[in-house]
Image (tube, rainbow, N blue to C red; front, side, top):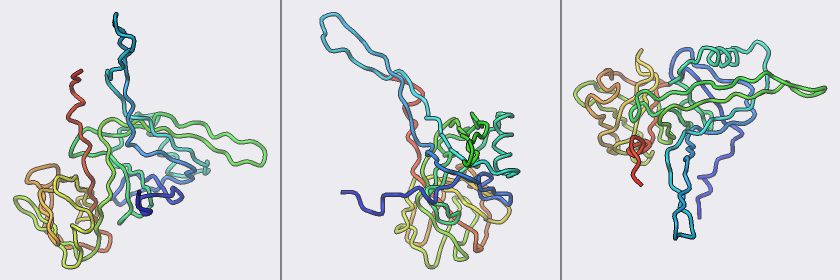
Length: 251
């Protein structure tokens, strides 16, 4: 039986862009969203003489399109941003789909730039807001995932986070238990609000109670500087998507 804490009510879900940077932006007016972790397989049905039952084989697949329904907000900068991103076919790598909107410790889905450095989202559709008498103007935004996404469900933040540069940079804490918080080896980790380099994407080599060691030279590890955390400093980690089978198909 599933634990009650595993269920999530979507009432506090959110979409943010420019995450971890000074111009971070909340997309306003959301009614409903889907998370960018779905996948659909294309199939072919194989019929063969002498066999009454046909076989269905996978021939490839596609990341599922993400649909967001929104209430139109006149003059809102976040909705204007999505409109322009659609027109200009903008690749967005700093967009996060929050299950519960808390920038410091909320769970979210986003591209996994360690597993897939070219992964991004594009705005596929920004529909015209429509309404009828006594109703709100509403519309739809669709996002097209290109590459691996994952859920980031381990978080820590605060002034007690200390970063040490070097070959295999480290993150330490005097009060937070990284193991209990869900951090594990081989996870992708995102560092927000560490000095002027935001955000950083790295890979975890090992985890101890108060110590995280990063994989040397992986992702932005070389950019990690010696730094003592501030109130908005946060780290987030998620288990990478297994993309080992996406380049070839063996039937």
